[in-house]
Amino acid sequence: MTVMTPNSYAGIIGSCDIMQRLFSLIAKVTDTDTTILVHGESGTGKELIARAIHSQGARRNNPFVPINCGAIPAELLESELFGHEKGAFTHAIRTRQGRFELADSGTVFLDEISEMSPMLQVKLLRVLQERQFERVGGTQTIISDFRVIAATNRNLEEEVKIGRFREDLYYRLNVIPIQAPPLRDRSSDIVPLVEHFIHSFNESKNRRITGISQDALGSLLRYSWPGNVRELENIIERMVILAAGNEITSADLPEKILQAKGVCRQDVLEIPEMGFFLTQAVADYEKKLIVQALNQTDWVKNQAAQLMNVNRTTLIEKMKRYDLVKPLVTMTE
Image 1: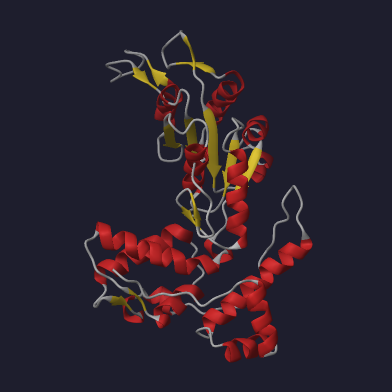
Image 2: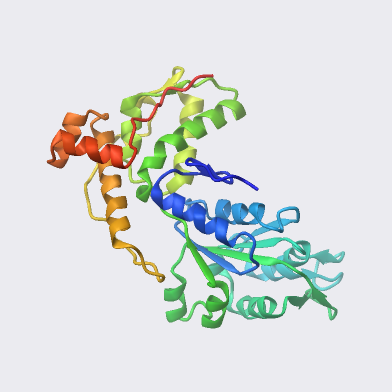
């Protein structure tokens, strides 16, 4: 079993409070067979969460079988999920096992579940209820023991209201909901993510980037990251390959990031169904604002305090309370 650390859990990098709560929730559900629905914007790491749940649970030595329901044409998705018999349709030259059959004793990860057609939604509901199915063109009932983790970047409650997603299937999937937070809500994790991606791409691309300049890092911290962690990963890969020197500088950044401006705004908050602790939520938000002010002023306390209109001593007390220390961005080989 993977030990939870302040910086990562089962391959997921994150040290902010919102990620620590996510890691705790993952740890609670790993050894259950309950169906899980992971919500989150594109690029937030929903499959990483699903893999973490599988890898830490009792099924970890058995298959993890992913399928992107939005990437496969509707007419082929049924065969991918349930398999087919030889001669079931044109080009079905041999019998083929489906993902549910291959995942016996393991986990099926149904990504982009909202893209599934109404017909398949009906069949999926039966599979979730009975854990049995027939291959396309077959009559033999196949029983398979699998856990289901689904994911979506859409609001399924809204999809249910407008008739695009079955209500009974939604409740069958949404037994334990998990929210994958967007990168803009965990900006303090950008620095460790940048360091991780630089190290990773140094190895895979045979490069020797030693770090990133403060100016370049400041631009990354001000950017809103609509593509979330996947966008950050792609940007770092590009900069590692194209950087003019051994250090990534502002000259290596895309124009859209250089033009981004930090804006102090009030985030749209969603109150979780299980409720929340107001004191903790306020503290999390205060910590986030302090980190943003410190990053914007290159961690010069006087300037950060002026930016927030507080005394320097007040800022220092809060930094101690939240254990905030200036991150190291220079990397060694």
